[in-house]
Length: 269
Ligand code: 13P
Ligand code: ZN
Image 1 (cartoon, rainbow, N blue to C red):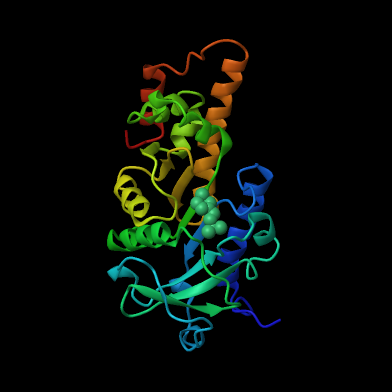
Image 2: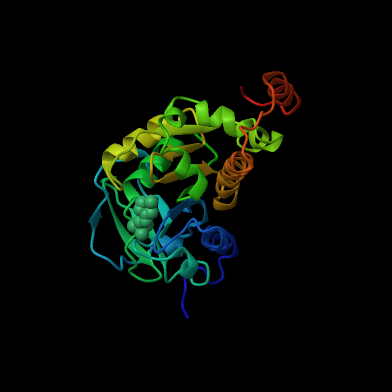
């Protein structure tokens, strides 16, 4: 079948990483039904043939104006599509979109007119900010990790850096591989522009942010590394819960041990 991925190995590699991550999200139980979404800025892989591809959808509004996205291209999970299906058929459960010159609308260009995720305002607002900052990050992953979401049903974990410090203290690797910790965003309506604005605000300080009682939103260089940051945080949540299930509050690493880690791994805080 004709696909935008044919004879474009670099673009195919990025989309295949999304598919691999989608499979992990399903296996972890973080992707019930259509839960979660992934977008990747693929502009660097766009050649003249792609630039000449006609729209296969009508012009659609983003819902907000994002000046740094002019002429950019994104692979996006389709709305209402399942991660477990995307894992096998990424171009039937997602599509490539082109941002138009008004920076406020887009068209779908390949392979099929699969409508992008309902969380597009958050994803694209984040990509806009990443480009503005000259960030190397190209991928954003939203998913519903069970134990991390459960923690947000307790007010004490919604206070700034309380959950982050607890999760870091469960196992040394968490701070090493999620060095900026977990930001918290109070509950907002899914897919809203308010949620998008709160997300870009919080991502100034963190690579992974929690949407209270909903899920996490993570950014990194590609879909795999964004997933890894969420995975190490949720692993720490599982260790915390395992200790609680054994009937005790875990000690956690001491502040001295945590500081020693930060120096040894050259971590930001
Ligand atoms: P979509 O199917 O539109 O991507 O929505 C899933 C989701 O998790 C919304 O927050
Ligand atoms: Zn969601």
